[in-house]
Length: 141
Image (tube, rainbow, N blue to C red; front, top):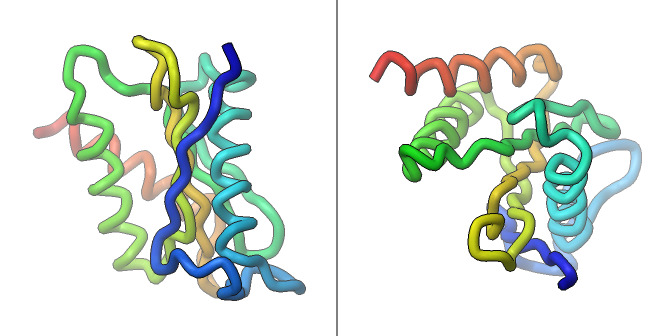
């Protein structure tokens, strides 16, 4: 059975809309594919790490989560809500989100990946700290 991924874009669903992310521009459709590919990569090759952050090209970065918390199905969404709030406050734009795979009773949407744009003055280390803070907040609640 072939695994597939689900993608959504934040801010826009327009195929022709250009997103500034590096020396060249990237379309929303390309960002959707990138998020899908990052989710698949994290699921297939980084599974034991559970979550992490990648520096990509230019000001783009990726965030992934391989931990759907079987004993608390809403926890990952709360962690991402915490992260999205921290990113928004820091001026970090979420450009696309994808999950992988779509099929399989227990595996469906097991891994989630985001593509984000870091503003001037922010780097992958800042995003990694935000992600750590976002997940830690759930431990204290």
